[in-house]
Image (cartoon, rainbow, N blue to C red; front, side, top):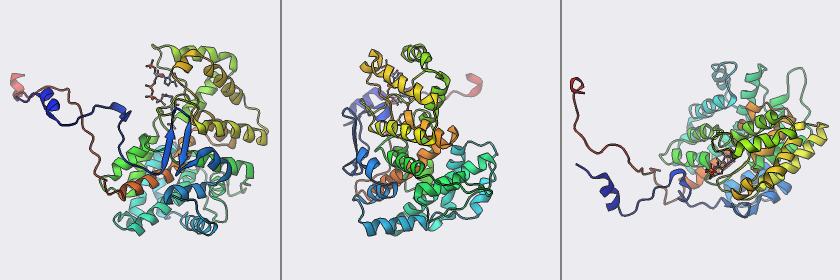
Length: 401
Ligand code: ACO
């Protein structure tokens, strides 16, 4: 009989680390986070500087290539992405197979995975040129697919991409234009959308990125790997939190109800958590939340919206940050806390929030996937386990059990 405990004891090195709280799965040069100091750098550049001064296309180039582009490089990259925005016409047929009321994230899991059937040439991951084309295809087509998922869910016809618009502007146009009336892209909304894309572009080895890397480690094609990332992102503890945060703020309704919800969050017998608070890595203010807090005011002012949800959010933040429970546990607002308020003001239903996160994160996922594929130390991901089941025993026939 095998003594399982002895087997583990005899293994040279064995770590048990549920949730990977202290185990690095890879080396990476893309994103750096100092969670205690509230710092997030992409290829060395602080996220607040990128959100303030850069554009999503430029940040995408940076994440993929390691350096900020020259003007000519940026123009070429932007042109290339705009040339790949169309999707195969048969993908429209694929959409029509979904129920009318399907969640757009459910549609995204399916259609992004299906890209591998439409762009089979890009599944040759051994060819660097095909990897580059697959990366461009994914970044370019994701907004088209996301807008199609939205249009399908509201029963409106799909809108074709317009390549003379910016990345964010084109997405807004495909989402909100209807045949009877073109959507006029407001520069403030376009800029807020671009900022939201920048803030969600990458976040090192979070659950969905690790999923993309793990799926890719077996040699799976990039479209299938990104579909796996989208599936993981959908969870309420990850990308689904912005939807949950806005629903929670709406449920709280008015600032006078906040103490009741804070008390629930502290109660160990109540599974309730303040959505949009806390982070596995940040034990300080999430730097992305700071940028979004400011953008929320700008967008609501511009649209002339006085939303009680924003007042509730600001008051909740103020009370939570002075509460001993939240101070002791280092729980601060995360990126999801304010993004929902902005997205809702722009006109997106909550069911689209995680789709927008997936849209922006695709560039991070594909940059991480490319880094993994070209890493000489890359191996198939194969976590160990700590077995706690029965030790070896003999089979008993059914009539003797
Ligand atoms: N409200 C109340 N208490 C909380 C919260 C919260 N939002 N988050 C954590 N805590 C408490 C836990 O109850 C736990 O208390 P204990 O030590 O007494 O058991 C302690 O803080 C640590 O929490 P963990 O769940 O162990 O922390 P972990 O790092 O595993 O979880 C997570 C991080 C999942 C983000 C968590 O803070 C959470 O559920 N937050 C709400 C959901 C959310 O906003 N998710 C978005 C994350 S950002 C992103 O994905 C882009």
